[in-house]
Image 1 (spheres, helix red, strand yellow):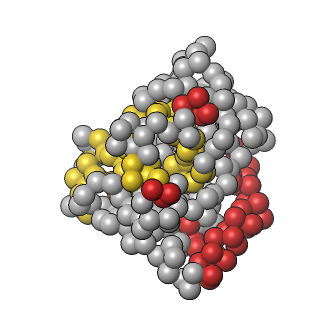
Image 2: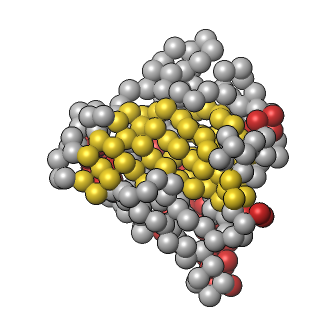
Image 3: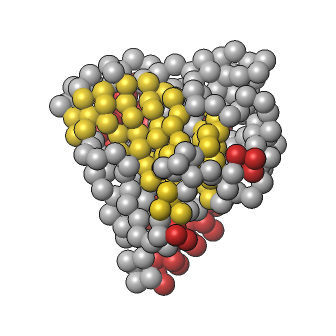
Length: 274
């Protein structure tokens, strides 16, 4: 399969994601359109208009959720690496790590790009959306060229931009990564799965939630104006959050907050109620 075909096949297309999307729309309909209409505090970024400018989005910890409102369930896409589509990286020694820019084990590749710290705070909707310590998050995303390690042509032997972290006492996990590309047909995003414990994550069992974080447009434009990301700027122009196959039915709980700058590195944050 060529790289273009891989990118076109990503997330298996609308026919594969349609059941999930319809399920979310039914939920919205049953709730009168208000059940998931939780406003994302401070979503997006404010910038000074230059590629090296700073980005500010108010308080960290992007979304706010009322008790009982979980982040939408999404498909993992065709490149999860969790055993659901061939390869299972979760059972490999070295997957539990915070810095996911490098491959581990026998692989030696390094993902380059604008530095991005990803901070997710897992919340327990069964207990008033308080912090959920002792859970685990498996996170993965594409590289600067829109490729997914383990699957995409040229990086099938790499496992960078994949990692697992256990939530601390405040429910937070932090990953050191790079800003992902925008590839044809999809809005820039980060995949993640939440597990009840580190043991569950590293045995790929008992998953609580699969979802995605969307990245705000202003931050994407800052990054994609830099060397190495030029194709992303063209790809992003072909879609929007409102037309994306996953986020088009609502993204208030999935749109991250991004702060920082291209020169100093950026930080993306999101609350993840499960």
